[in-house]
Structure formats: C-alpha cells, structure tokens
Image 1 (cartoon, rainbow, N blue to C red):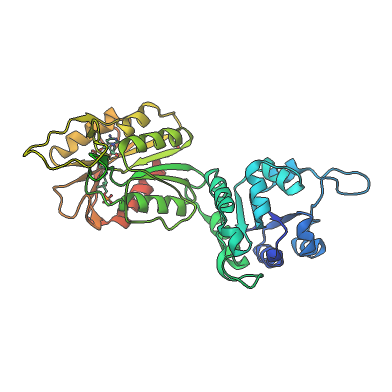
Image 2: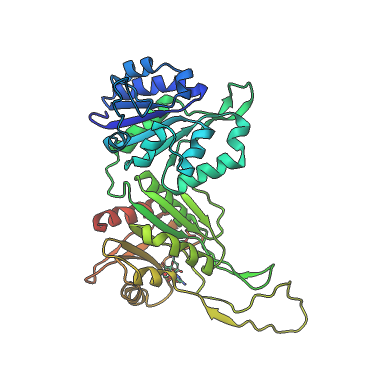
Length: 399
Ligand code: PMT
C-alpha cells in the first residue's frame, strides 16, 4: 500500500493520456494521495474533470486558477510531492524539461520539485528514435530523472515499434517498489568502477588483464535495485546492466577512467572501486601498427594514476569509499596496507590463491578488511551472492 504517499502526476498532450486515468485509479486504490497537473494540450485528450474525480483533487492547469486571479503555486506543488511522475511525456515536453523552458505550470513545477522525478515517454516510433529525443532522454537520465521506457507494439499512427507509454499497472508497481525499498542506499548516488583497462601499445594491441567486468555490472544492478542513482565507469566487458537508468560510462584506459571518476566522485555518497586498473601504460603508443622487424621489442611503461587513491585523498566526511584488492601473496598484510594508504572504509580482498576466486570465474571468495583490524572471511560463492554480502556490509557503514 502507498498510504499517505504524495504522488504528483503530470500529464502532457499525447493520445496515451487516457492511460493516466487507470494509473491514478490504481494509485488511489493503494491509498496514495494524488494531485494532477495537466498541460493545456493534454486537455484535448482527456478531460480534467475525469482526472479530478479519480484523483479526488482539483486538477491544476494554468498559473492563474480562477477568475479572481488566484495563483496556482507551482513551488508548493513541487515541494508537496514525494514523487513526481510525468506520464505521458511527449517529445515536446521532454525537450522543454531539458532546456529549462518554463512556459506552463507543469514545467515550472518540475523546476521547483525536490522529489524524484520520473518520465514515461509516449510518442510515435520515429519521434522516439529521433536523435533529439534520445539526447534529451540521456540528459534527463544523467541528471537523475528516471526514464520509464516505452514499450514496443502498435502505435496510434498504425506503425509498429517502440513508443507506447508503459502500462499503468507497471508504473504503479514501480511506484510501489520505490516506496517500499528500505535500503539506506535509496536516493544515494553511487559511483562504481568495474572491468579491466586497456592500455594501447599501438592501434591494434594493448596491455590488459583478465577482469570480465561482471562484478562491476552486478554491483551496479543491485545498487539500482536498492534505489540508488548509479554511475558505472567500466572498462570493456561483454556484460550489460539490466537497469536502463544506470549511467554507464564506457572507457578503455586508466586515464579515461580517472577522468570519469574525477567528474562523478564529488557528487557521490558512495564509491565502490572494483575495476582491475593497469598500473602502467606504454609511454608513447605507436600511431600505426608496429611491424615485426627485430627479435626484441622494448616498451617503456609509465605509471598510471591511482584512481582509488585520488578518491581517498578527496573524500569528504559524508562519503564512503570501498576498494578491492586482488593479491597473490602476503594477502592480508598487503590488503591492510592498501586499506590505510587509500583512506578506505572497507576493502574487499580476493586472492588468486583461492580456487574459484578472482576474475574469469562465476564465483569469488572474499575477505572484508575494515578499521580496527576487523577481518571477515567468506566462503566461496557465486559472484551474484558475493556482491549481496558486500552491499549488506556497506549498508551498515554508510552515513
Ligand atoms: O571483473 P571480474 O571478472 O568480475 O573480476 C573482479 C575482480 C577480480 C577484478 C575484482 O574482484 C577485483 O579484485 N578488483 C580489483 C583488482 C585490482 O586490480 O586490485 P589492485 O590490488 O591492483 O587495486 C587495488 C584497488 O585500487 C582496486 O579497488 C582498484 O580498482 C584500485 N586501483 C588500482 C590501480 C589504479 N591505478 N587505480 C585504481 O583505482
């Protein structure tokens, strides 16, 4: 049940506006409090009276609400809501949300809202696949707006494809999930690094390692499931995230990963650095393929930035930083050294000496290293279960 949860519904001018009646009905049945804002274009598709009746509240449309000149307070509406769902969201409104355009009450309320904002796009196939719509959705997503992807099927134009607004039952279910998540990660911004880095030798060859990227992907999906806003900076991997709202920043080299981390870390509450970063890179990668001329080839390697150390040095009090260590000898001693030197709150040690642990396996065996010499070793588990142990532990230490 959504008892007492305040949900603001924004309706824009699409044929899918008829579906919003079912969404409101569903949320009201779950005892949510609903207020509705409509654009004037949406009133051509569904009557404000219908939505006012279903939501049990007057519908807000214009800045001036009556002949007496009474002001519809968009700031109050924005602050009232625990969740703002714009459904259906047209290509026109999405573009205005991105540009900060404020020429109707719905847009002004969006700019005033402090709660999470979700958009459920609805439009015709070619409008949805148009680069401008894709770019607008990517920008909104980057700023933390959740995109409820439209589904595939028959469209009002008669075309077949993606563009149908998600079904009201599904949106209501997402709202229920959102409000029932108890995790402390809910609403937090999490930066995850994952995968290997590739350090170019020439345009064809690189220095890399065996990290598959699976751990980073699993961590990202689980954090998203627990309600976090997730940024995953990952090296090349064949795995993909399930949750479309995860911001995936695909990189190749350590320097590219460093750049991305420097951008995201200042706004993150939590950093989990599971990437296997190359410590060295060729000093000057050849600009064309190196030819097989002599029996020996000498490469000069220079040190890469230690990205985790940088994050540790630039950690604010309210930030939590988790590192990984992959060791082959003196595991605990080396891991403790990394824990201290990199200013961490938790270090996940995995040893290549433990069969089935590290990269290239579906499983891993980890030991948690924490302050005051606290140490906890786990049994060998599927990586999907290992990351649950890690996140459960993080939930006990995060601010
Ligand atoms: O991707 P998978 O196949 O699922 O494998 C997961 C994993 C084995 C790669 C993962 O569990 C793991 O152990 N990652 C860290 C591997 C590693 O390179 O450890 P390290 O001891 O070299 O580095 C210590 C920490 O510093 C790590 O958090 C690493 O991300 C970070 N680091 C290291 C070097 C560097 N230049 N920058 C960094 O940020």
